[in-house]
Image (tube, rainbow over all chains, first blue to last red; front, side, top):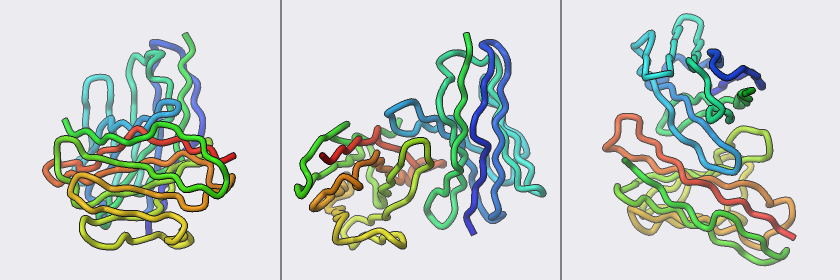
Length: 109
Length: 116
């Protein structure tokens, strides 16, 4: 079934790297996504990874996928104040998205 | 890139009145649109899936007579909250499925509904 878990809060200093983790239970998902939500706004797609990939790098973002453990992570390098937001992982399954609970990242200048 | 326009951004209404929220795909055809509800500091809860030209599919526990969804064209879906009550106050977000895109899902900017 669709059950995506995330930790809740992360505080990081500007310029440091931040890592957000996510676990999921349904191994038949084709795509896994990371979305960013700023206060009062909708969701912005940050990146995605196809289920047959282990890693994907996109500028400051690195996604790691461990299918054996059903673990997904997002690393943000050189974290900026504009990265302060809530981050959701999601898995695409049965023509819909199942979201994790979200992880709030606060960047300290 | 794919853009989904959601209006209004925020609305305040009196108890007992109805409120309509629009979701438009601006540069692609969306055969499927999704409506989510988000409570403060919580994740998105899928309310219903709407397919163009057919009835919406509601998730368990979502009252279809309370939350009316219409998807009359390939670019427009509407959510009407009927006889709104304070407990309907929430952040509502729509999403459209873009089959021309590999990753497929584009979100609107959300609507903050406050019922007083």
